[in-house]
Image (cartoon, rainbow, N blue to C red):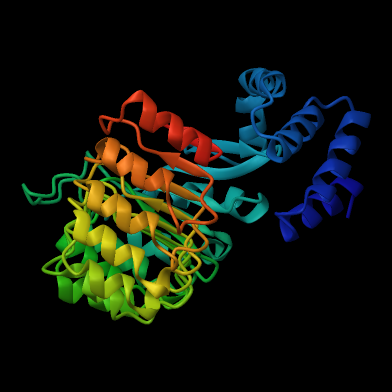
Length: 384
């Protein structure tokens, strides 16, 4: 095995480790290969995001050499995303993945963004190389001939999802992300039966169409879930209670923005939220009573970030939150676009609870200068 081959094997075996990549970059530099510079630049960018000059230089190298580097990596037709100097993700139709098996085998590719098609999906699901995939993003295929529900025109192909769900090779999958509206009731039933569902740690499915029974089955099969985002989804009658009754005990982030808030009290008083640090209830039509429920929920004791933007919470709700001693770990509170007025602002400024709160957003709440000044004196970071 040559020095280059040995280094590439180490990179493939340790895709999260920068050290073998940087050693390989030095080797490439010794052989006047500009890809060595790309590896160094992107590794540095991964450590300190936002370095514009480094990013511009990396993009310039890709514009000049990406086609050749992609061909050398064995990528024939799918789009490629480069991270830390190597192909990290592939983008395209699911059937196109069959032409990229060599790249999957020889490159540190750990995520896929697929337009889900029924064509050749059985062969795709049977690829042993899927074992290295950690993140899977699924989108509908607009060219598919599937019959579409007029209420869910952007749903993925349920048959293709079922076949992919039956794959025994997605053993490394930890994150599943659907595009907006990609999960309708048929797709949800396919997802519930997926063999790899219990190993997921993150599930994102905005705009999903679910009923409570399917949601209950789904929530019951994801005990290791850490991040669940179902913004703008239909969760069925009192769907939040299905989450409350689930076996999830490791949730860190729960985003329910613009969902029906029915069942909220059962949820925030359940074991499922005891580990939640970030909770979004933006746009759920929450009112003062809901704020009072949140303020007294002992199960939210480690909550750090609470998003209640775009609701109907008024002065009474603000006063309940301000007096909360159970939200003892809360660092950030978003109350923009509610109905606080000056009375709500003064209640927050004179809070006897919320001892750890440092960041507060109360913009678009008809708050005048005197009340705004009181808030600024009380909290480190305030948006009015």
